[in-house]
Length: 119
Image (cartoon, rainbow, N blue to C red):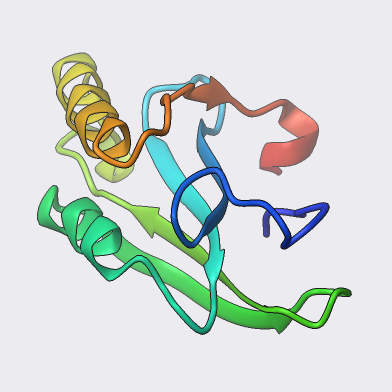
């Protein structure tokens, strides 16, 4: 779950927070989003899904400001061991995600989680 400080501002239309992160060693990235629960950015979410990412989790909650938020988690299986991404898949998938995010004005900054976050 992404913890958002406020629902008064968004980073893109109907998007409160984004995290593109991988568990160590950092080869297979997942997409985590906090979006408006009442007005989801359907075209943006469809663009992510068109890249082969599938919704792994969708959990609604009400922010302390009273606004409904949808916590979303997307993942994409790769062809490496345990459905991880090979290096070429990582490069291609991150490039494709970068284009989708740029389309709504979000600069993609993928990161590798710390061990404490990941496990």
